[in-house]
Amino acid sequence: MKDINFISACSDLGVHVCGSEKGPTLLTTKFNIKNYILEKDNIEKSLDPEDLRKNEKYINNFTKKVFDTALTILNDNKTPLLIGGDHSTVIGSALASQKYHNNIGIIWVDAHGDYNTFETTKSGNIHGLPLASITGYKCEELTNFITNNFINSKNSVVVGARSIDPWEIGNMVDAGVTIFTTEDVKNEGADKIMKKAIEIATNNTNGVHISLDLDVIDPIIAPGVSIPEDNGISDTEMYLIVDEMLKHKDLVKSIDLVELNPTLDIDNKTKDIALNILNKLTK
Image 1 (cartoon, rainbow, N blue to C red):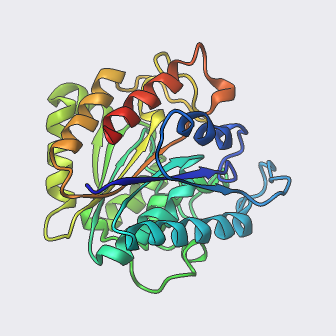
Image 2: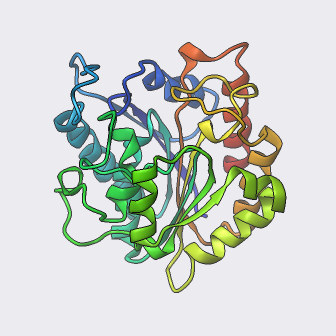
């Protein structure tokens, strides 16, 4: 893993809950690291439950900015570390890494699968579609700035899942995505599951993009996320995942840390966990 540059992806357009666009600024001020600050378009975002393509145009605008910024960092021989923002912000960072490195895998550490499409989404929140987009599974409308340069779904792994829609599971099975649940992490050990994930993601690839969503952690421990899911992993297990990742840092080509929502945090619990993770990644 080469020297890190931050991308502060200050957007919450992918989710109907407001606040996660404030996370990057809160976290990056603690570090003396080059930081590319990206702001969402100045619009009133759609919160309409009947709108099943919420803020699509503006998310696409933001994705292209992230994509171009991540490529700039990669071309400078540095490692992009995107700090979100909701999880839709990472479409551009993962695909920029795929374009630059040509053939990488992806590990998606998340309570959710994020593998819906516009045909299967029930909420219209686009932060539920990014992994499908990154692997080229439908969702063409969200990746119209590239052509046939997606991450192979067979080298795609979700770690810590516990809230996947039935129709979304169908997409993931069809695409060949590997899923390790929260229960798998607790039963086998976070480090062992992450080691397996790295083996799958780096099988016949040039490296791996790792996307860390703070909602994988139990909301009693980390309440400051937009879509909390009960019975998550512990902060200790999250740190073990990061530590295992760092044992293979020569394979890690790009990273995301997303979904801190300061407006929902309690006593800075989630912020402090996020800072601990960033300290590990940047030391």
